[in-house]
Length: 343
Ligand code: NCD
Ligand code: ZN
Picture 1 (cartoon, protein in one colour):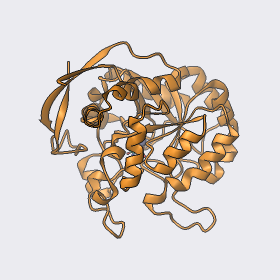
Picture 2: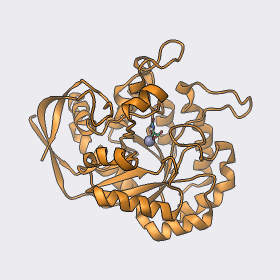
Picture 3: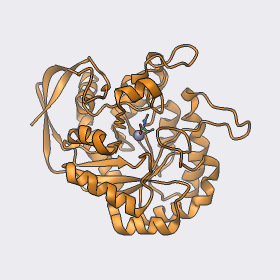
Picture 4: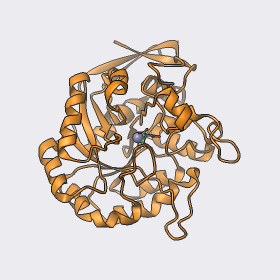
């Protein structure tokens, strides 16, 4: 196979940032029809006013339809969410990051306090607003002991089940699924689906951490952290399975090289390689028929959008991922890629 024509895909989870960083990466998203742009800025996008302003900035530079991942924070109210829904309509999703779990999540609500926000979930359920969940828990709520990074996703399961049971018609999406446990949970509840990042298809725990859990390669450090083989295989199987509950969301999360190296910021900038890498992964596992549905159909259907009508082209061509791209170390830096997006 030398060439693949693909219905234009969507990226259901990306971090575009603001300012220079945004300017440096945004053109890479023009290949998509829709992009969910997460609002976890240092000053979180958690009001209608901020969401409109953020959407405007993105629209001025990007050639795709931005959907803002509006943050559910301690400041969130039902009244504000009514406003968000009224003013942004289908271009606002609700994003939940528990407090302190990842980059810019300081304003997040702890899992144990989520029940105080149930009226907001009721509203989301009524209005069919997808709720995107960063499903990790870093603290045992009984002993208050810190939970190791590798165990954080499965330690969030109890909270996800509670939410799934309490809001049977809520569109709940588990972001960047990384474990066999979470794949299984999603299959069990009709109101759950999961997005999958190439990060969890490619990387494994051992290439990021040493035996003591210390980071040995900060450029492969993202949240949820890369897992061991058993989990990785389950995520690969879910992506390749043709089960419409699982679809693509890159979690492209650029940080300047210096910020990664000095402050160990979590996040991998994979926007340069996502479609090429996924194409390779599906082709080499004999599942090319599942590639287009995974990147271009299942997510749109799940969230109630029409499918994109444009077509993009990928060509069989080797190229090497640069070691630095506009001050950012890209994911898979230095790796030889086998497919290339062509105009
Ligand atoms: C993301 C970021 O940098 O904004 N980081 C990451 O490791 N994935 C936040 C997130 O999605 O957790
Ligand atoms: Zn993310």
